[in-house]
Amino acid sequence: MKLLIRSYKNCIPALFLNVLALMLFFSADGQEIFNLETVKSMAVSHNPLLGISQHQITESRDSLAIMRSNYYPHISANAAYLFNDNNNILINQGALGVISGIPIPPQNYTLKAKNNIFIGGVTAMQPLTQLMKIATGVRAAGTSVSIAEQRHIRSVQQLSQGAEKLYFGILISQKQLQQAQLSVELINLQLYDVQSALLAGKMDSVQLYGLQAKLSGQQQKVMQLENQLENYKADLNVLMGREAQQPLVLSMELIPVTDLQPVTYYQQEGDSNNQDLRIATLVGQKAQLGVKAAKKEYLPDVSVFAGYSYNDILDVLPNNTFTGGVLLSWNILDFGARKMALHQRLTQQKEAEENIAYKKMRANADVVKAYRQVNQSAHLIDAALKTVAFRQRELKLKKDALLAGKVLKQEVLATENDLVQAQADLFAAQLSYRLALSDLEISAGIYH
Image 1 (cartoon, rainbow, N blue to C red):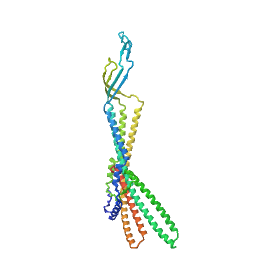
Image 2 (image 1 turned 180 degrees about the horizontal axis):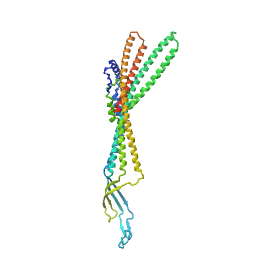
Image 3 (image 1 turned 90 degrees about the vertical axis):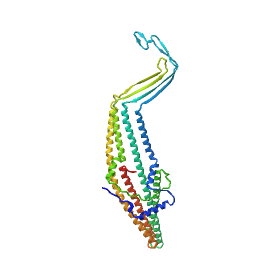
Image 4 (image 1 turned 135 degrees about the horizontal axis):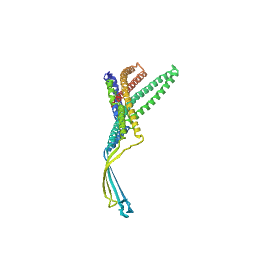
């Protein structure tokens, strides 16, 4: 099934003229106007929170480099200097044994050692059987890098979507504030008429008190909306990497509705590109590598080594010595520690497999839900556009009638109030559409 959502090219031109007039009004003071794409781009490029996830990627890459270094020989050097106060070495008769009844040495013997002694050496150790374990560790570290990269992408998506929420939240709040201010103006006009009627003795004070209470409520609403608007602007400024109190003017242009692909297209994309599913798959791969690593702990460690040492303790001893050989290390009995470690890794692998299955099911469900919401929101936008256009026509007729003296100013203000409400509803429908569309693209892994 392919559902094509209508674009704005067939919308009533009057609405776009109104939007253009508003844009010119806001740009008249020379302030920079930010559109949605600019806001999202700044939020992604200037927000310090993304630096944390970028550092995590760097940290994972460093861990990978450390793990790879284990492939190569480890070369170590050591040296020592000693001062020997008593440089006479006494070897007692027969201290080295007896050969054919003759003690070695045949009599006490004193060796003259040096007072200043220097000992040093270099050893190179190359792992052999450990290379298999190292290879598994390198693959696991590489998987950790991929997980950090996918989480960074997910953070970018969440940040971009958050910028969209604040963007339309500001536009909606601006319209709500404008509507509340019009209501205050309208009530003031009504109060004037009621007060005039009271002075003429044509009305009691009940209606007056009701209007005064209504006015107080609207004034309170204006203050609340002003605070809400300032908070939204401060949050968006910070998200964009700007000072919280900097002036912020947003473009009020409408975001076109785009055509959708069939729902199966987004489901297929989500099966391979959904960030949560990708992360779950990578965690599953890391769990499999953990099982392999646990099994290889049963193997002995075999290494080859070569070394060189130098000493100048005694003249009768060689100063330079070269050594080489094979080193074997094998943990034969550990009272079940390796067995339990393997069982733990197998359990983690099962957990990861079940999580992958759940994430795949969740991604498909999210695609279907978001797809349906996108279509519903597009229809709401279409209805809101028509309402705005009708209210614009009504307002024009009311203003013409006011000039002709056929209607009162209160009627014009009431129509302006209805128009602003319709415009607020339009931005609310836009917000609903953009969030649904971003949810759909995030679930499919194609959100930018």
